Length: 293
Image 1: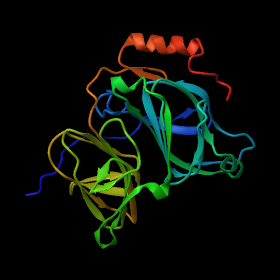
Image 2: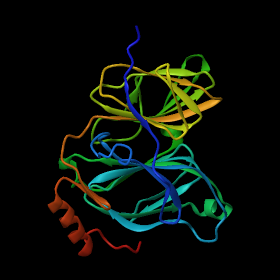
Image 3: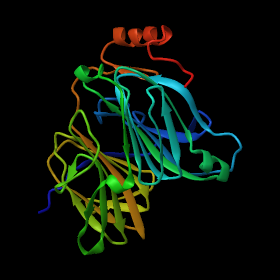
């Protein structure tokens, strides 16, 4: 008898809201769990479902803002997004690319539609994750990883059933390019019609999947559609995913939880209220650097 990892719940994101004037998102995490620790080390997930933006003469996005204590991971599926920070990092990510920014001790950055994409208009489809850092890493120097589509780890499924693209961690012996501070697996699974895959994640890892395209049957009986987030119980067992549409795409988030207090306020995620106050004091005193860059 097959032993599957049981499903705790399936949920969809709350009402869509705008982040700045360029990102139309639904905040799946922590809204769907009401607990920032439930899917630790993943703290927040903003999902930008496919949306067409008309051509614009001005660039849409989010202006300069600070972060401290965690990492932002932006994953692009359609459209192009540009990033710029006050440490001299900048870059553009397009379909299949990932922008992994470690805010850590503190950084000012902004993100916006890439210039040509703004001028021409088009569909934007993306995810932004906030990934927590352990207490002893929150004060490290900020850094930036530009992870391009061609750098992702690739695992081809048997009989041309699809492909797994690994961003971080390891799947079936294939590693992703991202450097992480704690153990985690982040990967996209692209299944063709009737394709299937058996996933094996440690029961000690908090694990969930977000369906990005099509429909997927999970563990032989639960059919999930585009926009559904599937949260799994922390028990032993495999996850069977079967495509129920011409093409099915979903992302797997699985990571070792960071068992430390989480105090989140605005753009900061720390371990104590005092550290939050200190972050705002440092921002006020210019220790994050200038907003003009």
